[in-house]
Length: 404
Image (cartoon, rainbow, N blue to C red):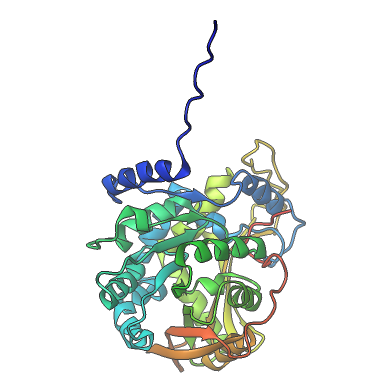
């Protein structure tokens, strides 16, 4: 008589999780860290290629590199880290150095409520470290879950080191997400992650380092974040660069500020050197400052072909694109906001200001007139009437990658 073998018992999801957690706890965040990839990364190359094959333009409004691609890879990430330590790039360095004191003022508005922390674009990680230290002190026995979100896995890894420095947050409570947070689809997915991890516990979201200013449609992005991510109990920490007036002299001064930083130049050109075989001529990198709709100083960094001939640079898929004489590639855009216009931008997004701290540094514009610039940190919540409906499915401009 033949007898069949008893079916082999499959491990349950619970037992698999129980095996996984001790493994995470045994791996320190310095050498090891988990990573969840939230989208198909192979699409990025296609989108970069498409953006460089756009028609010619003399003012940087056609061909472009999405700013997310500026951080996508080891070379670009390290260039960014070095730029943040360049004393001639004061927007970033002063923002990092003064963050702890500015955040301390706002932190009092969080009272003693425990929060989980979702950092949208953690950067160098130093600012996240200040936030995490405060959240850990609110309830020492409470497990703060830290979720950094960035389009670049290398930025997540580098930022995680500084963010968790001298912290006792176990790896199991740290969940880096590689995700482009500019689309409605991805923000909806991020909200689902927050609902699962946080349940009814409030979440503190942050968008620091003037990241908002890198999007062409900054208002749409902020509205989408408010309407999709924020529940009534959640809070939003926003940091932007500001100027006390906006005119052409102030815009020219902002352009000169970025132009004087070798570290910023190396960063802003690293992506185009990585994705093409263009031989970058420093004199052909231009910094254009202008006044944007009465709300901000807008800075566009472009690379211009001044060779007198049509170049055909090589792309990642080993094909080429036409780069005629006087054509331009926009490498990055950024802003310095007028504080009163920033307040309107926030209100129009369906948000209200709970607390803010502004630090301005006195100086002079290119004509010798007084000009004050600096950083503003704001703690926001949803307006009582609720956030507005999401805008378009994709925030157009330099930062996002199109998803068809």
